[in-house]
Image (tube, rainbow, N blue to C red; front, side, top):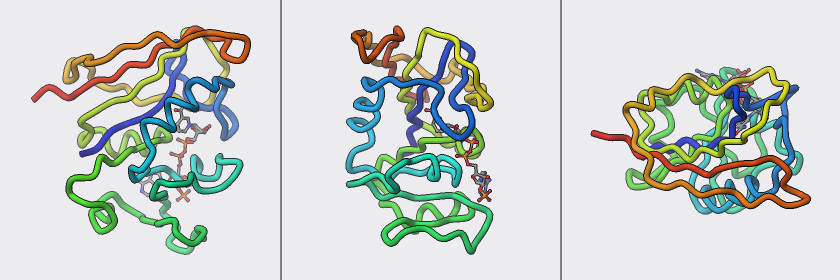
Length: 163
Ligand SMILES: NC(=O)c1ccc[n+]([C@@H]2O[C@H](COP(=O)([O-])OP(=O)(O)OC[C@H]3O[C@@H](n4cnc5c(N)ncnc54)[C@H](OP(=O)(O)O)[C@@H]3O)[C@@H](O)[C@H]2O)c1
């Protein structure tokens, strides 16, 4: 099964200058909870945005068109989505974590969405793909708790594809 995991602002912005536009530790925690022990699939630029390298306790799968792109030991490099099945089990929940091009690539395959909606407008250069929400139903919605470290209103939503 393929799931998307991402956070977006009011205008569907997801990134700026190769990074997240916001600091929201609650979303980092949610991301960790949702992806832990699952394979994560990401574009080369998202992989390079991690300050401390591959994310632990998750198989990191990086997509690049460059077959010579160097990844650290334990990280899997693929050049198209057909190769994914060689590295994941049929019953894995595979977490596609962006960025925009990779969400586009898996748009037709996705079954579940884990979306953090941030109720704020940020400058950005990367936006989430336009998903057809009529194909999904909202199965869970949880308000994020604001505090001095989490200053933007945010909501965690989970959608499931309707068959
Ligand atoms: N808010 C969020 O939840 C969230 C999530 C993820 C990322 N982001 C942000 O989004 C930005 C990065 O996203 P992005 O869209 O610019 O880049 P990206 O999707 O992370 O990476 C793009 C790269 O992926 C490879 N790629 C893309 N499509 C491919 C295909 N069809 N086949 C093979 N390889 C392919 C290419 O790598 P090569 O150039 O090496 O060929 C391409 O340059 C950053 O600002 C990041 O912080 C935000």
